[in-house]
Image 1 (tube, rainbow, N blue to C red):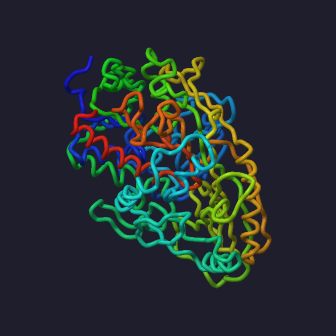
Image 2: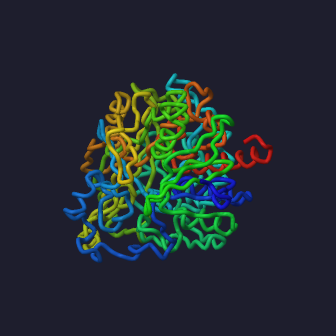
Image 3: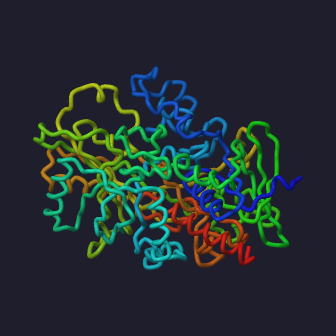
Length: 563
């Protein structure tokens, strides 16, 4: 039974990067908004319990215990399982999933979601990223172009606070940046040598990151303190997260209601009006079910969970759920494949060191299949890396957690340099997720099954990702260069995308150009689920821009009575 108290102008499902943005934009535009989060609340500063700890402050020196490995069989496959972030990842016993093929799914079920845990690298897609599918006859065409998103990139960059240089590269469009972090002396020298060796066709630039280098007093945020503890929650608010940035603004409007421990089980669909009328919520603490109604709904539960909600909705009309009439729902899973690159030693510079612990390293933008370069695969890759007198992986967020205690205690050794590739995965129809009716979670809900793998295009690309990294360093005079092509399974990039893609035709896509579900135009999906292709850059900035754009459209459409 829905009461008047359970009615809102808008409901936002999920409080991560895109959900936080949806809440901010909709409340600032005057809508009464309910923000639903399936996990516990985490308050800014107060609940960052490990933010000031060092490795030696943990009973097991920030290493996973045998019990942790037993309880978290997926997390233990990679770096996220450690004492410092323990409790920040979804409980795998409560929320299992099925792997038809291996898929490493790392979920943040709490207020702020993975905005508290992300790698913070922030890049725009380029013009060709929006046209490549069409030009190469891959999947479907994006229904928007770079020009449609550019002003929204500007908008979210200014608010979030992205530090970086304006590098003037067509492959990596410039944005609205705060001053960049500095490359260290070795990185600067390597960058100069690379530019010379490859005639400017390859670049090494400072990584663009959502860490502020100047204070934002209007948001009560202080600039980065060079602690490199971002994944523990930043008490200074130096990096963009829901807690530090979007949520305070939304709360200040007086238009936001936040409800944690709220698992959205389905979108409630009115088949006569062909609109959603609200959502059904299972209270994860009491197991009670409650309905909330609204004029519009934003699904921002993370790519797979937003799709799970759609699959679980309106099944009396569409067997595959709301948005499934195209047969694209749950299809075209993408990630960025990684675990491949090179490292080596740099002679000299022993009288030089670097200041503090930067929250970013260097970035090498894509150069393959760009300009006159043509390869035996489609698309390309970029690299993230660092030079250091410690472990080079330290400055790459996805690689850095759980460094040896020894590294923090010993004298600096020789300089090392390394970088790891992030490659684009093509959208394939048969890379999919689906509901497994045989397996239920703690609350009796069906779980997702994963059927995703790297295809021939990605495997060919990985050879170049290793060889090019080796060639790159050797050309810069790096010694004892070693390439590596290690373990990777889809999901490890923590950039899951696709499954409810945007498109031009309701027969082949789930969402239109404004992120509306074709079959229910008052339902919007603006997280990773909406991506039509993946590019090779970190996608979170694009989710922010798409969300701000869709929220603006939604409010205008409401005013016109179109929703």
